Image (cartoon, rainbow, N blue to C red; front, side, top):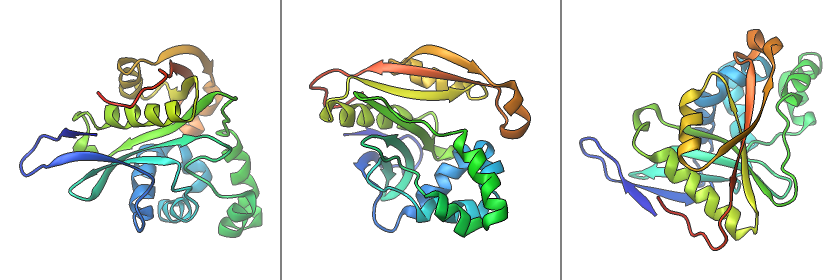
Length: 211
């Protein structure tokens, strides 16, 4: 499964399930580039955050897009009790110290989400800025949909914040429908967003993925 990337010297973009061995740091950097504004209050400074994320990835809970062997995009998902990003409370306290770590745990708890039976929960899409607008996000979504079908899930679920209309437009183009919006104006000053919309997409049985 792949697509033709545009641009001088660009080869085909391919998708791979799981994070390739040795690419944990690259995945963490892409994830932080996409979600660092939201996660910053809990995990800053950036260098420490990227190291923490890289060290606690569940590498089998991702699909990655590669161009010439380099990861240019990824999508994480939560299924079977595990998500792409991990790290126990003990790990947070060990990395950040007990005094500061307790505050960070409280902030991280605000982002805790769990799928119900029959759901596969998407845990964010991150695409290299130079590759945006080339169909990489769509490619990743369809591969996650294929994973969901293989796991006999009936639907995909994701959350999108109000300050990311581009992502919401992508999700709508790929068949997601908004179900509800939770307004959180009290979080805008801290995390940079004031509303979260939950979206769903039914999973077609027997789907093998594709654009």
